[in-house]
Image 1 (tube, one colour):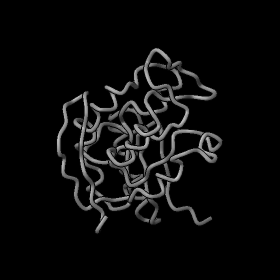
Image 2: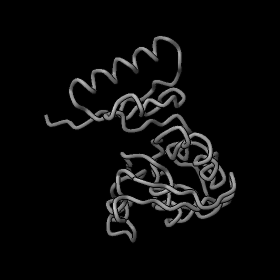
Image 3: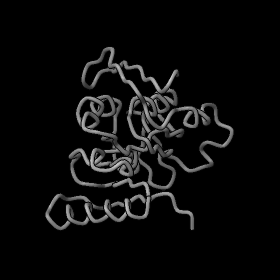
Image 4: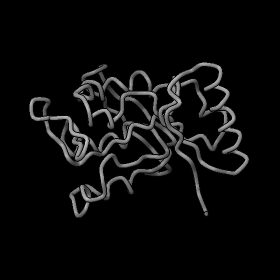
Length: 182
């Protein structure tokens, strides 16, 4: 079938059974040479150092929470790089193109979800949020001929250097990324 990887979800606890399941999944993925995304996994523990096939994991409030609530604000998104993302790559699914620029204009919706913030803000997350496997948050029709839709394909999957230049938790982050000579 030429499958390249697997995205496993709903491993939302860290009891012995789920930890053992996750480690069996990692061993199986390595055996079959599959990339692995433990979406909905337990707390970050440095699994990305366990095997090169382990790409990313979620375990944070990501973009899908916009479907049923208002908790994913710009402040929330600018806290993440300072806490959860320090331990390793995170599967957040940025890049929503149906957007409301401020919380009063935002309304949760399951059938055609939107995100808070501008399109440029959503695209910047592909650089700020480290994850070698980034997926767009929206349905394909949201990106059809939309300005900026090609940006994700320009962002490298891995970085050689990331100097953090400035920032304040929950307010802003300024960083630079280097991949090869880019």
